Length: 242
Image 1 (cartoon, rainbow, N blue to C red):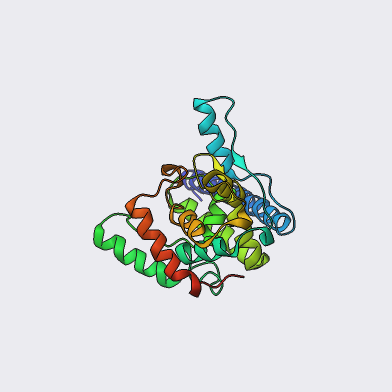
Image 2 (cartoon, one colour):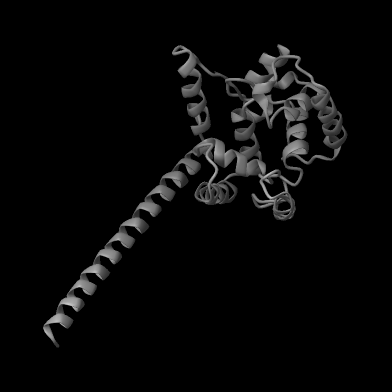
C-alpha cells in the first residue's frame, strides 16, 4: 500500500474508533438517564414525592421577586380528595383516561390536523399521564427532544403505576394558582375548604382554570370560566375515574 494510502487508512481507522467510542458513551449516558427516571417512577409508585421539577422551577421564579417566597402545597391521599374533583379533572383534561395507555391517539391526530391548518400550535392533546410526566421531571421548554422524553416517562408511569396512583399524583402536583399546588392547597386557597369538601361546582371551577391557573384568584369567575364550568358540569356524570 502506498504511503499516502496508509496514512488515509490510519486516519479513517482513528476516526471510526472515535465515532464508536463517542456513540458508546452517548448510549451509556442515555441509559443512565432513563434508569434514573425509571428508578424514581418505581419509588414513587409506593412513596409520595416531596416536590416536582415544575414546582422547583416555580419557586425559583417566585424567589426572583421575593427571596422568602414559598409554595402552598399539602399532600392529600386519594381517598381524601373529592370524587367531584376527580370527575371534573378527567372530564376537562382527559376523558379517556381510564381506558388509554397514556396517549390519546385520536386526540393527537386531531391536534396535528388542526395545527397544520392554522400553521402554528393552537391545540394540544396531552393526557393526564403526559402532563404528570412533564410536571414530575421536565422543564417547560418546548422541543422535540423534551416531547420524546415526556413520551418515555409516560410509558414508564403507565407500565408501573395504577391509574388511581397516576391520578392521585396528578391531583397533588397540578398548579391551581400562583404558587398554589395540589388539590388540598387549591381547595383552601380558592374556597376555604378541604380537598375532600369540594362540591361539583367548585371542582368544575378548579378543572376549568387548569390551563391558565395563575390568572385566577379566589372567586375570579370570568364569562369564559363560567362557560367552561357549565361544560365540565355537563360532562362530569359520564367521566370514569379509577
